[in-house]
Length: 67
Image (tube, rainbow, N blue to C red; front, side):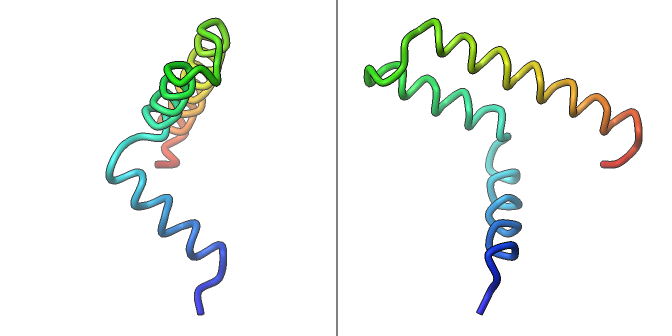
């Protein structure tokens, strides 16, 4: 039987191949906003913080050659 970590790793690899996590967050936030579960101002905050934060992490990883 597969451990939870192995399942998560396989799921992460699959998600990365299909689309980026940044896009998934944006799609989820947009869906919640359209269905009334999220205010538009909250959507802006979620999108901006996650995309901006992830971009900084991606840049550091690229600079350090970790990827």
